[in-house]
Image 1 (cartoon, rainbow, N blue to C red):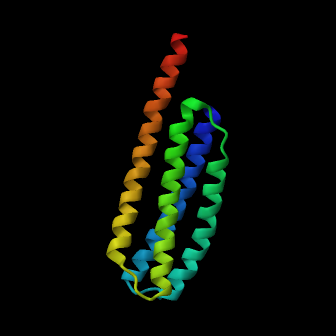
Image 2: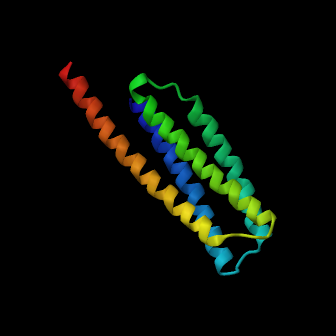
Length: 133
């Protein structure tokens, strides 16, 4: 369980870093501090990192009682990745829907917080179950 918890925390931390870079870049689009081309360049780097995170998360060998948590992590990582793909498509077409991207970003951040809380609850339940055995 500790190994999975470390993998989960690492994945959430790296995803959070990527989302923070995305959010900063989106802010800079709003402020017109960067161009659509600059935004696309930033997104290309984030997409590569995001792809790697998904591959790592999908390769985790988890126990059956952790399967749902692992699948929720993979789902969150894929949603985050899709946000980046949608954003780069908009940037490449020079038609960035900033409001939609911001809404999607906030929804992912909310889901990320929920996943972290779900993990705390599951960890407590599993610890209690193991203590009873």
